[in-house]
Length: 77
Image: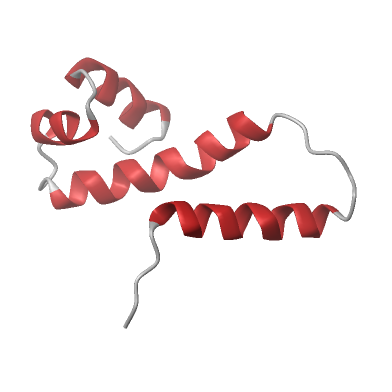
């Protein structure tokens, strides 16, 4: 089984998104993408870090307080 790199998955999803727009111009694309990606990223990383915020923060390259803020924003704690 071949695995796609994450950037390939994102690229394919964005191409499908633009195709679905059928010429309509997108708005706030960066913010929309960050919101769409951040919550599942936090969920998966927290699960693999056994919900250890310090470990997850290290893996993500974030300050623990920043991670905690993001977890609260996404209603994950």
